[in-house]
Length: 141
Picture 1: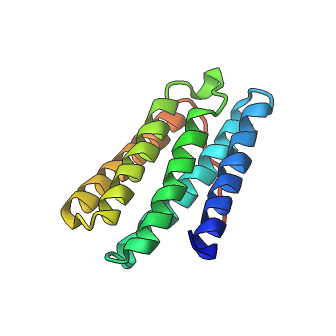
Picture 2: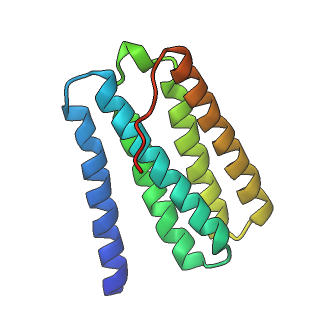
């Protein structure tokens, strides 16, 4: 294992640890919404970056490892009553994105694009259900 790969693995572990810290906080919609916003922002950035650099397998592998950490973190979030109807769609977004990035590792362009569109549809559903519950994600920008 090269030094660069060790750094990537350490970075993935730190990202997962940081994102999982939301579980230790009190169960309230604000913490959940902040964590969901962070997970979705990083998901979208990874998908866009890999889409722009499709064919770079090493880069896709790093993005895939990070997506696995986001899926794990999403599964460990404390879900309050205010967002419980929307949460399955957050998980579907993260899981579908992970599968899309796995397809990028395998250089399966058509599958990557199909799963990317599916992940974005799930994110829109997640946001729509949050809106119905009078909840919104904070803006990270």
